[in-house]
Image (tube, rainbow, N blue to C red; front, side, top):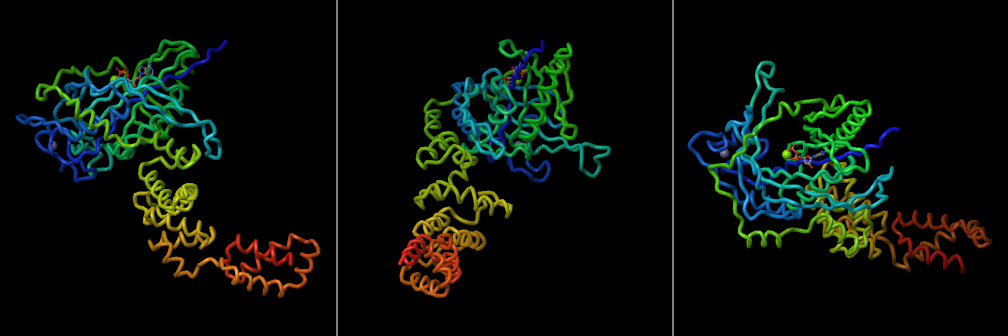
Length: 491
Ligand code: ADP
Ligand code: ZN
Ligand code: MG
């Protein structure tokens, strides 16, 4: 009989905080600065200088801990994590260890299974444990490829050394790669909403290591875990987890056992491979950082931070469902980034038509942005202008079809709906007298069709509509036209 195994996954996520300066010195954190330009004696680890803690970084870490429902320690401690590496000139990294900033948190994740068409079919709300969140400084970057002398030399760029990070360690609460994926997606969104991290995995401002084990389904005891590093995209996280879960189950089924080790994701090979085993694991010789006092937070400051927490993605999605009557799918799509959510909400409020606003934002606007390679931050069409276009349709001044053409022109030129409608002479003809005249002309020009219609061939209604549209260059108001035409045909 074969045993049914279940995966157990825990994630360790490093997020770079969006401060202007580093964690313990005044150096800039700007990405892409000339190599080693953003350095000083403190972050270079030269003797005789002292670290000074960055208040803004603590504030951002605190907001994160609160948003993740952590218990915030009134006093946390920075320690030295000692190891030798060429990108770590001090020979140690300052990191919170046994007294982290926050513990015992939770993140509730609204997600669902997606059907083949991408629609959410089974909405679920799951809550995952956060073991701890702590602050630490980043190390530098060794560069082994792509430099003039890379064949014989390695390079080091210390711009990143000392940049503030938070590490967010989950409980081993995920049972599939999909759950881990949903959690990371949601965690990233939360950080974006808080404005504490830009969430860019390619530039390394969000990094993820995954711990994986398997156990017979229904049992409690945890199996031996393997840590996978080097997962710099959501897709790789999911692929690496699926590979690793499979590998461990196969290994055990063949009578083998799992060794505790660190593995790397090999993108080209689509597999994980061993990097180091437990035996070679580091002993970091942690001890409290003698140059920094314990970090004690004023309770009033914590309370103030709590009050200043912005609307978080789930609360926002739920609000979109109840206040604007959107479905789960639309609410989740529109809250994927705070900018997109803000854009939609501004348009919905200004136009008074949330449904149409959602359709424009997820439809024509998303399409136009994609085609012009822009993100919502770079959208050339302000939300209140799109709202004005929605209103032009709702008031019956232009048809839905014309609105699409007006939209394209607005997006291209940045002009207002009013300007574009006037310039293109697109005004919809809703005036009954004007339309009646056109209908009369069309009917008398088509006596045969008219006779056929009156003899019972009602399908011909569409033909007459088409003729009137042709006469008015598509500008007849369809609703008014339909009513008038039916009246005339019945005469
Ligand atoms: P380590 O001391 O090796 O860093 P931790 O206990 O600090 O291990 O846990 C690190 C991460 O690994 C956490 O996210 C935790 O949830 C996860 N984890 C711990 N044990 C297991 C296990 N047996 N299987 C899967 N994940 C685990
Ligand atoms: Zn510095
Ligand atoms: Mg650990």
